[in-house]
Image (cartoon, rainbow, N blue to C red; front, side, top):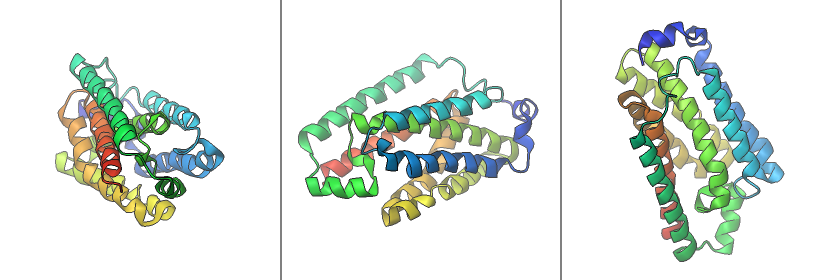
Length: 230
């Protein structure tokens, strides 16, 4: 996407408060999810459909708000991108079946993970009903952030460093909510500061590839936790 498109088609790209506003939207969405929906029984160990609907609506709102500067990203997906999405869907089903068949979670372990709301060990329909829309919201916010950084950071190095810093920082509240159990999420967020921007910057409709990479990370970690009894 030409840099000028980001600078002229949407005035919000140029405001000094843009990055704090972006972070506030992210934190507000996940604050509502963690502090309202989850305690009300709509989290990853409850009736997750409401959380899934909330994140779908949030993702739609973000992409709708920035549809002009993101018009090239939101064009009709290429067949290759759709094929990779379909492959990820098949891998998701396979991982869930493997976990359910060969690596059950003990009752004590289930209670512990439910208390900490570490839903990734579920690897079932309840978990992904909320997680897939949540990842869509995350990737819509990531796409907006990367394009904004492109217009102001001055090159790929600036995009990568700025993204890693901000994306890692907004995950720090997990340390308050989950204690040390949230540390892997914070570290993973900082490391993925290289993967997501590279997908978006280097490839046409790269945010879809970033979504697939994001999902694959969860599948690998979740399946690994079940397989090794973590």
